[in-house]
Image 1 (cartoon, rainbow, N blue to C red):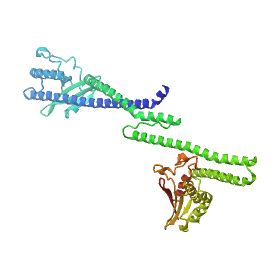
Image 2 (image 1 turned 90 degrees about the horizontal axis):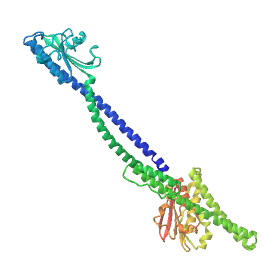
Image 3 (image 1 turned 180 degrees about the vertical axis):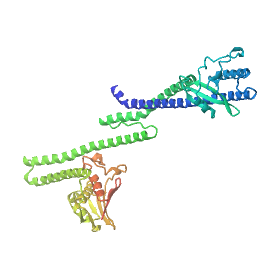
Length: 490
């Protein structure tokens, strides 16, 4: 349970961060919606108030034209006050008319029931007095502001005002006012209700979708985490499921490929340890046995030289194994440097072959092509190339059956020397020939304990040739032959 909780930390973090981003997005969206909604409401309210003020102005100006130059006859008062009352109720605003001194003269409260006009100051607007500054501004074409009207109102109001003209002179002003809070409260409440319900539904859907998607997205990572724990314990068979396409699928494929390589490396490592253990144990046992036999007199004096020669060969075998491993370490550390000199590669092949004379004669192996080789001078590290040729000839001698043939060939063009070493025998299976140059790899595992070698020879051959700027390839036909071909720049 504890491990499961720990493995879900990434899931919880990803889900939490994503959910917070979604929530923040909704908050930003709601704020933007509120801001632009208020602006729209304010613009619409201003337009509505302005249109109705224009209607009142037009009516007042028509009344003036029909007989009352100061809008003071009773008929005009009734018409205007009734209109002010109707419009005030319709647009939820306070609409009134003031004179050129800024005092309110007509409003919705002056007209009582039965069209009776209230005489005296309006108890509601009697204290209103519009400043001359605002009147002058209104006279220039209209007034529209969010204002307290120089202290008339305690809170900010939308105010729209237009002048009433006669003979190109203002005789009064129509004002429409509405407190911003009373007008916008219902509007905001409606917006909030709609947005809140929509946001809750959307958030629930978004969170559920995010939970599912997050779980699916982090599943490969959880599997990789589990896989790494198993790999750390040496279990390389576990694989991550690859689903869908994209970066995570590519990562899963790469992860499985890495696991496969790790399994191969682990298998190769174990094989190498087994091979090296055998390669070390066999000569050490032989050396120890023969030396003990000589010391305790088990081996007769006349045979000691023969067995000492075997001990010498086994020591040389151990030396070659250790040298190969040391060279591999130097190559991987970048410590092996080339010291080029001029030498005849054909002569080197001939001399190296002579070192295998005894085993060649013992196995009755036929050597072909030596008489056709011409002198080819190259400039390379003589010790490294000698190791290359030695390993290839050693390989050919090991795997050539009794009565078989080893064929040599050396040729050159204007830029490079080409060497061919071919031996008859079982050959290399086609599905393994591509891996023979890998370190620690041995083709014939069934004969690993019968054929000397730890799988380093061909790896060193390929590496040393490539260090000289050359290349090596191998071709083989099962139960017929194996041929190694390499070239080096002259």
